[in-house]
Image 1 (cartoon, rainbow, N blue to C red):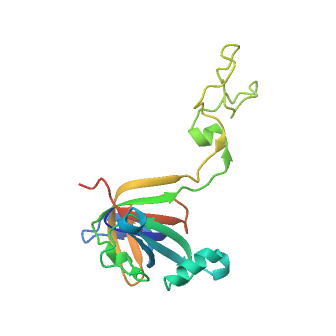
Image 2 (cartoon, rainbow, N blue to C red; image 1 turned 135 degrees about the vertical axis):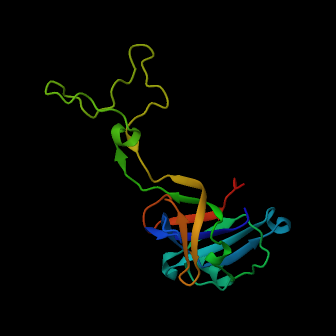
Image 3 (tube, one colour; image 1 turned 30 degrees about the horizontal axis):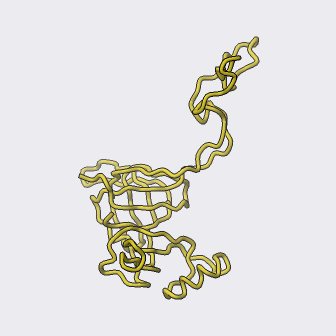
Amino acid sequence: MDKAILGKKIGMSQIFTENGVVIPVTVVEAGPCYVTQIKTEEKDGYNAVQVAFADTKENRISKAEAGHLKKANVAPKKYLKEFKISAEGLDIGSAVKCDVFKAGDLVDVTGFTKGRGFTGTIQRWNTHRGPMAHGSGYHRGVGSLSANSDPSRVFKNKKMPGQYGNEKVTIQNLEIAKVDVERNLLLVKGAIPGAKGGLVTICSAVKAN
């Protein structure tokens, strides 16, 4: 992983190329992130850089976290995350901005999908509904569970109602369409996981050619 940054999903928009082609993009407020710790092979057993993102009040984080940030001379932040990237050119307290990426870079974007709560099988698994005739009293149920006297149980992995959404998802090999350094914005081609305002992680693509 060469480059990485934390960001907040702003929403979707579109831009136009010089030829007039429309490109759908997701706008991400990427950084600035501040380096709070640099881990090394000698001291910690592995190399990594810990960064903090998004301003918050000191009473909204733990005392241990507040002391950790104060030691790094960084204002209270809402999020802390480690990246296994090179610490070359980085110092404790230095800022990582969106200009680490440039237009045309391929990235992997990780976020949490929209939470939809407890849903039935039609919404969760796209199953077919039951007959809608007047004689039928079974429209949006699960259907047969294949649990007769033998084996008298429901098999594992049966598609059932339950929690839907709010799961970690990574979209790979998305392209950076534009970098706006003045406003700390990355315009990523296509859609990314999560609701507006959600935290996302943008890293160099691991499968980039």
